[in-house]
Image (cartoon, rainbow, N blue to C red):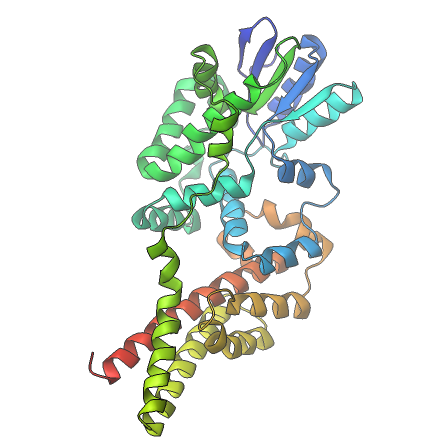
Length: 388
């Protein structure tokens, strides 16, 4: 019998805890489907992750372009950084991330069993986590993810985590201490969501749920105490918090200020001041966006695109210089099929630059950061020039 932990909630409901990069977990999934003989195999996957795992490629060029166009590059980078952190902790035995979930789906389909996807959409989870985190938490977690740690050999391995639930719980609580906002979303909310989805499955069917071992205790508590969310509660957990009026207005403050200043100079016939304003605005936006793109090691044409687009896109919050720079980078340094397959298997910060798919996302993200910095720098300079 596998050492992978499992909990029987009832005679018809078993929860199997796994590690997403563990060979033992892959074997345990096969064993449990064979011996437990469930009617339904519930897996900790959302629709998008299920599609990514079951398709031949984890990412394709069309998908990469869509990520750039929809402004999701930072979220995809964060997802990949989290996967890299998992490997950096030593929680990798050479398996593709989510291998045991893929095996659960494949084994269930081969046995003609029903497959239930019970996880919340990964993009929703990341967006909610980012919104819940304070600025200091964001800086700390990004610094941790980007930092190189040479003490990984002293960390726990997969076997220790699966055998010792107290150790696993302490690591989960360490995340909560490190970032309370992220802990609420990544641990508490997902425990509740997974439990709610499991509860919504037919009670007259025999169910095997395959979830990350870190969620076992939380799911068990929700199911035994009947505190899992109902249908309305699940919808609430899938909802993205709506920004308030003030938050929505912030991106428009600089464009409104610049346009107002332009109208003022024109109305007063101050052509020199208008020219000066135009020069400061264009130079600051172009330089900072170009620096951001250059830090991502973008193609020279992508750098020029970021510089040219930034002064215009900074006046329209619905556009972003990084989108244009990322598109040019994608066309000039087109990722190969291998680049796309390996992207979510990257192991170090440097590999994000060497991988062409990773570099497209870096160009998109860092060009946007540079453009925003340039807009604020230009606005501060213009305020200073008029004595405010």
